Image (cartoon, rainbow, N blue to C red):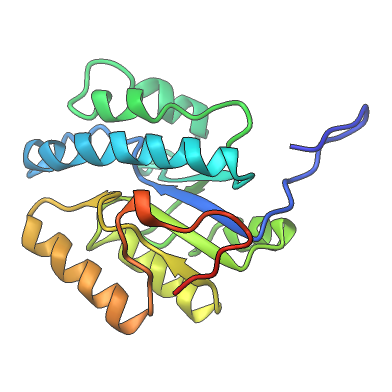
Length: 197
C-alpha cells in the first residue's frame, strides 16, 4: 500500500482477490458439513493469498455483517476466532494489516456496499473470487461482477458449499454463463503479463 505522511491510498492493481464470508461462525444448520469442505478450502485460499500478495494483488475481505449494524469488520473477526464452529477457518485466513474489507448486508458483495468504488480506485479489471459459499454469496457476487464487465477467475478449489454437488453445479454455471476461469488455484495466472483464457 502506498503511504505518505498525510494519508494512505488504495493499491493500484488490475486484479483483486476477493475473500467472501470466510469470517463465519458456521453455527447454522449444515454448518458442520460445510466445515469439512471449508477447512481445505481455507488452506488453499491462504496459499493463493500469499501468491497474490507476491504478485502485487490486494486482498479484499467481503463479509456478512450478520445483521449487526453496529459492528465493524475487526469486531466480526474477533467474535469468530474462538468458541465457534468456524474458528479454524477464520484462524487460517485472519486478515493482515494491508488487507481491505467490506461488510455486506446481502449475498452479493456489490449490493449496498463500497466494493465497486474500491475496485475503481484500484483500476481493477479482473477479480479472483474465493470463499463461502459457492452456490450463494460467491455466485451472487460473481453475477454482479460479470454484469460490471470484470474478468472472473473463480478457482474451483477455493470455494465450498454444504454439498459437493451444489458446489460443482455452481462452478459449472459460473464457467458456462459468466465465462469464469475455474482452474484450480495453483494453475491460475496471477502475473500482469499473463492473460486470462
